[in-house]
Amino acid sequence: MASSAPRKRAATVITEVDATRATDLYRTVARIRAAELVLQRHITEHGFGGFWHPGLGQEGVQAGAVAALRTDDYMFIAHRGLGYALAKGMSLESLFGDLFARTVGSTGGKGGGTVHFVDPERGVLGQGGAIGSSFVLGAGAAISGQMLGTDRVCAIFFGDGASSRGTWHESALQASVWKLPIVWICENNGWAVSARISEQSPTENIADRASAYGVPGVIVDGQDAIAVFDAVTEAVDRARAGHGPTLIEAKTMRIRGHYEGDRQKYRDDLLVGDEIPRDPLGILREHVPASVADQLDDDARHEAESVLASVLEAPRADPSIIYKDVWS
Image (spheres, rainbow, N blue to C red):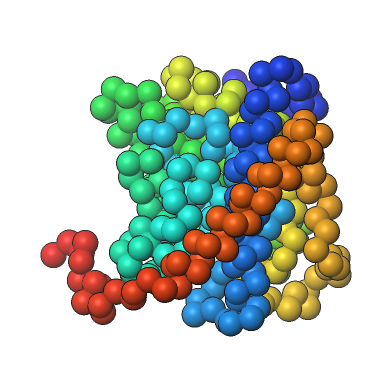
């Protein structure tokens, strides 16, 4: 039985082995950041045909958590940013292709954006049709792993707003009873669209809710990718060993609006300029040689710019694609 209070992880201690991990995480966070910035610039200058929910500043959660998973582990992504899928091994071309409805996208040109990123071979199972539906779908994926006799783990990402959906509580009850191999990862950035966490939850911490279902609740610094990696690794090992789910709450911050272009009139703590408080890249730089970090930054920027230019030249799909991959 889990204790009644969520456990906070101690500050990360870097060892010789961790230095290599820090460099790998820096590379991933730099790639996510570069992709976020090139999308932000393109949308500002040229507009966008849909909604882009920026994950700027939350890259440490995504990179750190996914690094703790195996390629064949299942993953349901949240809608903020593309870091989950990029960190899991999907190509930036396929992700940009989905965002801009090009044939090079993982959906072959159907578009649909973040929630439709999918790559079953890498365990990326996308997202459900409504906020909160991934809890139920993820539980189903975890059950399949048990039935097939595998040790696959299912990671489910969600925001603090989605944590209030009834689907989490329903899934959590059964997942805890059946000891399903699930890791819930809540990116608590303090905002559910335009509502503060204090306006939508009677508890300060989402992790407090874990004790009601007899599973561990862990609070971790979401800006520190290494701390997130350590927390998720422990939860994954626990799930893989047959001991059931863990609820991890990564405290992070939403740098920009709910969607790109959101004027955020509801917010009195708007950040000015491009500086990110407690930047995940800055924290990782403490453990990565400056020359290495600089090169990784340059590589990431070049990749993002060249891939975007290439994707924008790729063809759009024929409208008949809407009939493809449909059960009848």
